[in-house]
Length: 324
Ligand SMILES: [Zn+2]
Ligand SMILES: [Zn+2]
Image (cartoon, rainbow, N blue to C red):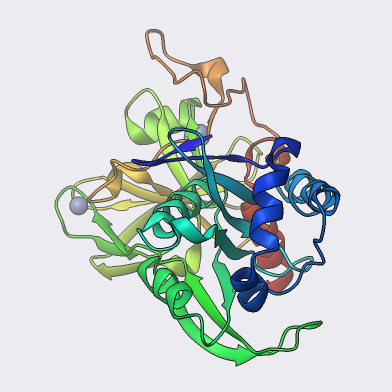
C-alpha cells in the first residue's frame, strides 16, 4: 500500500469489480483508452484476474486501485508492460466525478517514485489520444515529454507516445587535497560495503563502501592518479588508484572483474549522503562494535550476484559484457 496526502494506492483485487466495471464501461474511457469488451460485472472480474493480478505476478508491477482515505475507489493508475522486453508504460483512468482535482497527478507521481525505487527503469512510456488534453497535461506534470504519434495494434485511433527518461545525476568528487577531481554521471550496478582486510587498509577504516560502476561513467578532470598493484582475494591483480600527494584512494580495478568496470570509493564523492550499500560482504573480517543495518543482506565472504543485484542491474551487466 502506498499512501499520499489524500490517497491510498493498493493492489486491485476481486473486491474491485464495481470500480473496474464503472471505469471500463464509461463512454469517455472507451473513447480515450479503447473498448476492453467489458459488458458485465463478470467480464470485469475476468479482466481483473488477467490484466491486473496475473500481470502483477509476472512483472512485479501493475495497475493499482486509487482510493480516497475514506476508502472510496476513484480510479486506477499504474505501470503495465504491453510486450515482453518493451519499457513499461504508465496508464490511468478515473471515474467521472474524480477527474480533475489533481488526483491523477498525485497518484501517478507516487506510483512512479515507488516503482522506480524498487527497480531502475531507464525509460517509461505513456500512450494517450491526441485529443485527450487532460491526460497530456498530467503527463507533462509528471515529467513526460511528447515523442511521436503512432497507431497501436488493434486500435482504430492514433496515440501520442510520451516518454519519461531517467535523469541521471552528475556527481563530483576527488581526493582530500583537491589535486584530483572527477565527475561521475552514472548509476552503480551495486554498492558493496566490504569488510575484507584489504578494504580496511585501503579505507583505513572498518570497511570500504565501493560503488561498482562502468569505467566510462567516471571522468577525471584534474590531477594525476598513482597506481599501486596488490593481489585481490581472487588471486588476481587488484590496482588501487590514489592521489600521490594526500594518499586518498579513489578507485580500484580488479583484474578478476570483467574489463569495463571500476570500483569507486563512495567516500571520495563530494556528496555521498544518498549512497547506501546493497550488501555487506566479507563479514568474517568484521571489526568489533560495528553496527550494520539488519535489512541489508550480509555475507561472510562473497555472494552470488543473482541474490543481491536488482534485475535491472543484472540485465545491464549482461548487456555490457556482450558489448565488450
Ligand atoms: Zn590529493
Ligand atoms: Zn574488500
